[in-house]
Image (cartoon, rainbow, N blue to C red):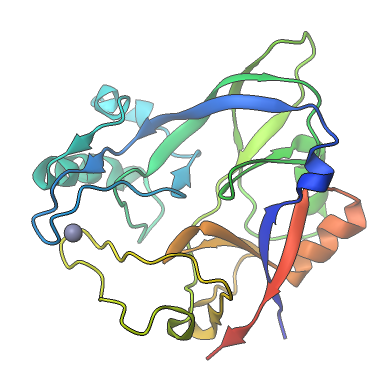
Length: 242
Ligand SMILES: [Zn+2]
């Protein structure tokens, strides 16, 4: 039986490294302004596709400036991006694309986090995990300008949404998602439970589709990280319910 773990920044470990960065993805979908279904203006977080290169479409400049847009404009921009996306990927407002661009400095550990939902990995750790047979790791180049002369080789993992929080750990009176924009608003539960039927069997690392700032790894991933001695991730096992 596979065990699943919620992955977060192990601050005791990452604080031992001086590595720091100030960066954002090059492109993004705008936020949604005044949804005609639910009336909300919102933008999501945790949907990052660093491997998706919007320079391949002539309209890429329309994705450079974060801003809210009306629903029809959001739909137009979603359709421009869709051909470049993995199959069946949803494209909520605020989805970001392309390399992480900005400045960086210092010594980077094997894993470095931005918040809870973006994980950078050092090249040697990625190579080691892939050599250990960990599945579904997609390392993407970053465009970080380092202040020091010898820049470390730092990649961002494209971690795609698969799997769901189980209904049992969500508020009992939760409204269904907005039929227009798909938003379903709830806070992260204190005691998350994973929905067994929704979990992927083809990869060892993913994020949750209904709470995309939560990154989940299998016991295979955890064991390989620990055997390699790569620090920077704290692991909390989550129960799985059918
Ligand atoms: Zn809506």
